Image 1 (cartoon, rainbow, N blue to C red):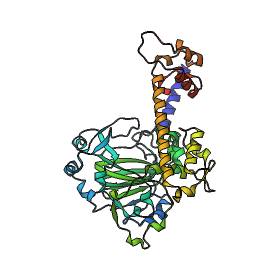
Image 2 (cartoon, one colour):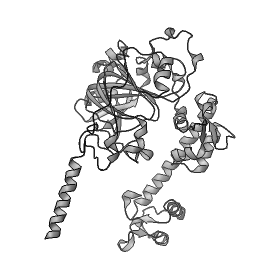
Image 3 (cartoon, one colour):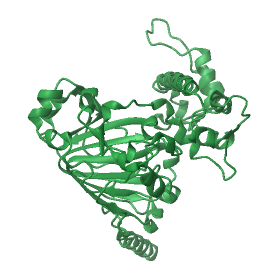
Length: 437
């Protein structure tokens, strides 16, 4: 009886401690007040000022009214106009306004989405259709010096409000502009990437419920400072590379973000007098270069001596073996022997053809790995993975013995090559659960 009382007291104490943790099971940011505001400007700076004052030192900044008066700000507030002008454009939608990286999506037309988005739990996220790019204006801060040579993607985000993103980072520089509605951002400095949780290294985001943060599973959050930014229609927000952020939306909400890769500013690509840089140019005037997106990965690994080393790149790209990583480096800079000078990337010295070839090579590797993963999924779903007699582990011999074809069985049985590959990747043992393979 005495032991039971002690245990009950212990449970009460633990529960009390958890409930007293600041921000525990409350919305993201409840653990402490936000820091002072990030810089807010009433005029968009010229490209050199933007680079020197914000992009180079990696400081987020908000531009109030940056796209005021542009066609999209007025025309795109009208659903009928969007339906009549772009209704046949195919786009992707997410099924569920609270982001789930393992969730499902669908492909539909803008016209169909406009009929559904006010009643259903959906939002649109897609590369901006080419037809819409003529009406979207790029602000002056990106119009010379090299920004448009490194554009990766331009996404459009559209909902009736109430969306909530995961807490995540982007692998690119990001300018997010809002055509309608309100968005609220939680921004956290990249210094806290590892502090918040280890899963980011593999995923690029955190297993954190942004509406109910579990401070016991992510105790590092307790001391993480954060910034709150409210973005309204007409505003733009610059989010530097790998700044951690969460986004929530309110009201009919249409935003556009442009991602580009880090680079060294090229003054010769601007007019001598920066006042001659126009306030806007249509997005349709520029080309996108997704093949250069790997630059962000490389440049983030540069050491103080100016070099990028193959061991660091291999750690950053765990999905590829060391031989593949060496090959990736050699394709960009033949003869570099596992040590690449970062300035060759940032100063655009490497020929475009090498980026194109590397882009194709990486896509081929990814397709091959996806195919192999599908094969493993097929192995996982077969009965042979269930260990005999309730044993937790199945030794190599038992796995091989379990591959027995039965006469008249139409189920495809994995070959010996499949089994050998599976065993190599799982150290000769298979754990007794489908979910952990």
